[in-house]
Length: 309
Image 1: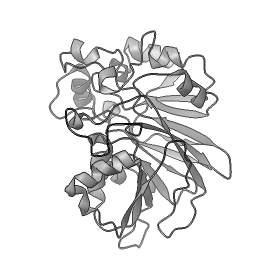
Image 2: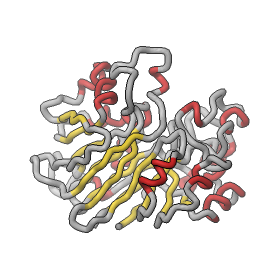
Image 3: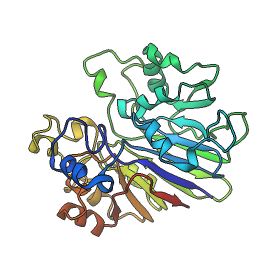
Image 4: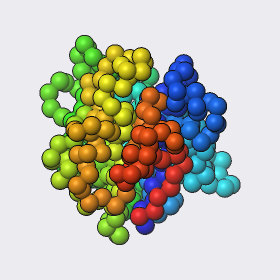
């Protein structure tokens, strides 16, 4: 049985963002928990005992404390159900939470070599002692079975695949520690339970819905997909930035080439938007944009949403 918990559904900065007074952030402050979102991450498990995280957001400590399934087991002085972290990119909102996992518990970080090169180039990540925290490179199109801390098999399989994207924004204009050529900066993941055959997809950053991507996820029972912005120039229109969604590596929800339209003809059991920015009006339950998304079969999840496959 494959279990998935949405630890955070928001984009970088979460909702409300600490320094933002946009409509979404104001509504979240006024209406409390219902509209609040921490930064995007999910946890999954095949046995409800050992769990793996997809990305480690800056809000990870808060997310773990808010999720009873990820608490230390009763009576243990030091323990964590978290056996590993799989990184799909090197953005701050995907890797900064690793620094909150520095207290000595063993786990493995799985990431493409380009992402591992970025971690290796920044000495602050050395607080994760490699005697306890192994760094395991993963390859595009190469399935692997994440292991438990004692080396035992997890019974799960992870298939990384390339999606259109970009390297982390803090590397713009700088030499990439992992080299400029080839894919690897932005990955999608297919997570499968070997015993049941159940699987889901995680794609939290995607600049374009290609035909190859559509073919990959068609027929899936569950897909988490990039929901950063509603329209491509949203940040500009809102006065919150000067970049389009696509230039930041994120396809819009709406529009002829947006996620809703491009994925409408696929057979997907459950479609969930993740990594939703505070500027995105689809966050607001009564908005026309939310109604449009839900009418097309998409879900806007709350933190803590649990799914069993």
